[in-house]
Amino acid sequence: MPGNAILLNGVVKTANREMGVPGISKLRVRKTIVMKITVEIPSALRRFTDGVQTIECSSETLPDLLGEIEQRFPAINKHLRDDAGQVRRFVNIYVNEEDIRFLGGNNYKFREGDRVLVVPSIAGGSPAHPPAVLASACG
Image (tube, rainbow, N blue to C red; front, side, top):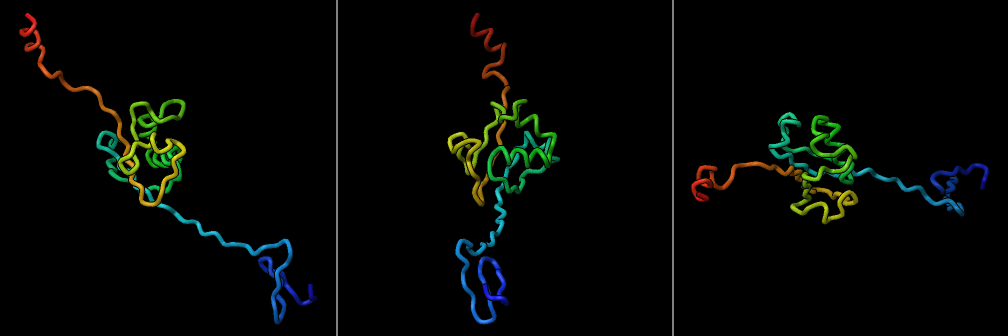
């Protein structure tokens, strides 16, 4: 290398020319792109999110997303994951109206603009026929 040359990003620069250095490539500048996904919180879970209906997140995978939601709203944790950290059996998660289990589950990589819906199964209700109607029908 000439005496007045400098090495900058893998390129030797002199006063009047630049040349590549074998074995050193130019450095590439990487931009960090923050992708936005929208998570819709159903009314059954809003008491744990202080009434928040939608959350903008930037997670890459489902475990990351659940962690991000739980970090913002710690009270929701036990309603989304079991003691082993897995999504509760009766919680369904949809990405753009597709069940995430059929998209790869924990391995699914979210994309810019995805809409995620968290749906807890709700059991209960009343029988189709009140007990008095059932008793008279049987007897």
